[in-house]
Length: 74
Image (tube, rainbow, N blue to C red):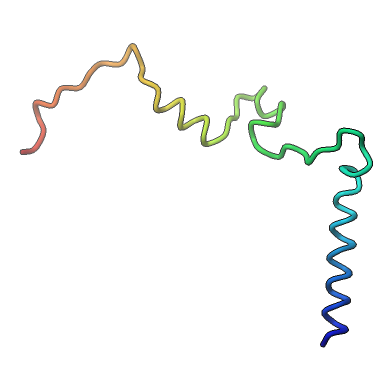
């Protein structure tokens, strides 16, 4: 049981080191930005993240017609 645990731990450690090789070797190595807003090709196509779309939807439209509350249920 202990032997299996040590082998598993070794495999996970090797995997972590291999994933970090480019980050460790490069002078200014960083993790890649995988967020939608960090992708310039998606920005060119006008695709934004859900957070950005929510912010845009919450902005008040200056040209919008104000709705009256006359017909509200009481």
